[in-house]
Amino acid sequence: MGKPAHRRTADLWLAAGGLALTAVSVWLSGSSVAGRVDSEVFTRINSLPDILYRPLWVSQLAGVLGAPVVVAVGALGARKFRLATALVLLVPAKLIVERGILKALVNRERPGASIPGAVLRDAPAAGLSFPSGHAVILFGMVALLSPYLSRRWRAVILVIAVVAAAARIYLGAHSPLDVIGGAAAGLAIGALLNLLVGVRGRADGVGRASE
Image (cartoon, rainbow, N blue to C red):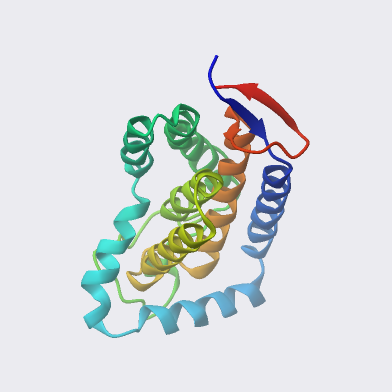
């Protein structure tokens, strides 16, 4: 059957933490105080110099819907079949959670329609804003890839995810709360997918399955 795969206690904690932070983000989306802070932080990031446009625009491509499929092809090439499966499943899971659940719960306009003076850089002005779909993808991949990487490379992909998610604020597509909610949901989805398909490596008490 191949090498064993495991369900990690760490993923249980990550899923619980991600779900909790997502719930807090949904609750904060209805707070006027949180809204003012959110708008202020958005304006600070969104008003950064235009010289940052090109590198940040490129960085946010790491969070497009097809990114997990591209990474899954690499995982297949490395014979990491469970990782490849989880990466592909991230796409429909993201769509269900983002569009079927969170956007139905939070009716929040994009910064272009809700924050005066927002600078839009190839970002839509209208539509529902919460959560950031890019952030869901980015942090879902962080959760899925981390068990297979060294500590140094885990730090690298986390930095990439943070920069790419922040780029969505700079471009004017989302506010910080949208990004935080998306990141939290992505971590929860990724951790739950790890528990579903299993992760190659050392078991730590949840269970094991064959590759």
